[in-house]
Image (cartoon, rainbow, N blue to C red):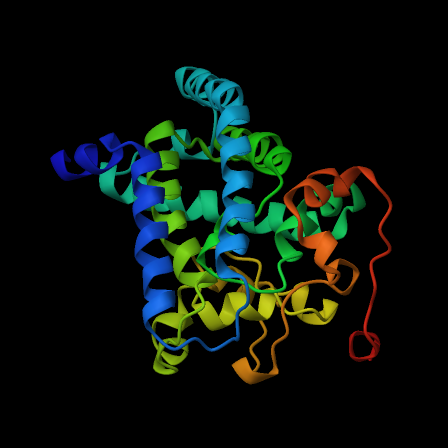
Length: 273
């Protein structure tokens, strides 16, 4: 319990900065599976998303915590119907947050309004560790926070389990998005339960049939159970979205306004088959 309190007591901004510094350094030192241009500019553009999100989330995170604490006070949610040991409840709660996010993520690909926000993340044609930050701030601060509140109300999840979930998921985010070579054996071992980099790379493939797969963030079992799992060789992957391939469409300002303008979602010939 003391270890948990220590971990959750660390300022999450320090953890995120540390993870970015670690993985971004590795990307400069080791060989990369995908060619990369203008790394510094790419990093700067993606950091701008995180800065705006942090400013916006100062307000919405308070609402999130207060709502979940109110739900807990009223003992609303399925986990309040059964008595479980603390650690089992905590692990199960993290899994349930991930389960709820899986379904919200799927919805973000199918509901046009949500896709307008979420496609900002998929717009990146040169994915690396900083792509972890390339989310439209409205999607993270409002859509996903609202999803967390709904999940807490349905399952009876608390703020402690949410904090641990975010601690774990950000580690996975940096591992999944980093432009690094990982051992293929990971897919056949840990990849049976957890999301591996090759799984998430498929999700960032330009062809929609692959974009609409591998929605999980931590536990790939959700995709395996619900028929959305796909895996293809790394050398067959092409990142981004066809409708965001122009250089001007990769800029921070363009991507920030992109949900509010009409952009045709292109579909390649292979996606139609």
